[in-house]
Image (cartoon, rainbow, N blue to C red; front, side, top):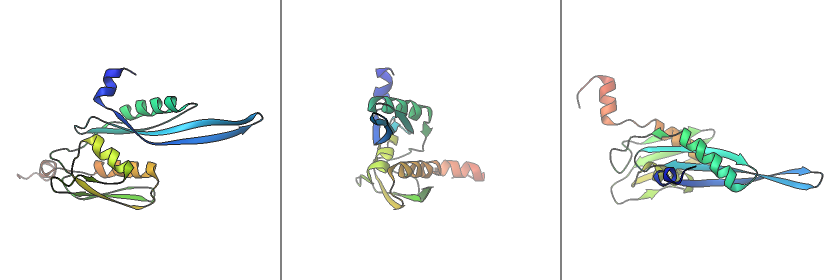
Length: 159
């Protein structure tokens, strides 16, 4: 992976999991990594990669995240409206906040929101607190966001 691409979108490792396979000579370990990548200008993606070593797993996850980048509405410092994202039994509520509030969120959701470029937002996680499911629920919430202009265009009215 080229270094100039990494400077545009630094990755944030959400979780590294170690799995042990018991073989005749002992245990053979493999690793899985969950990574969030974003340019802080409205594009963010997540990736999951597995490998025999941690750097290999992270590199595969970063490649997957770059392929899975999505655009989110980033008109101001916060989300345009309250939204609930779901994945499995995890739910993430994103709530608009006043300037200066900061990002009030857990580790996984915070990484997603910071990578997208939001600076002031409130969130609440309900249900399962599995970090991987929370990241996927946060992406579901971001996919549901609509700006005033989007809604006006869909309805065929002027703002």
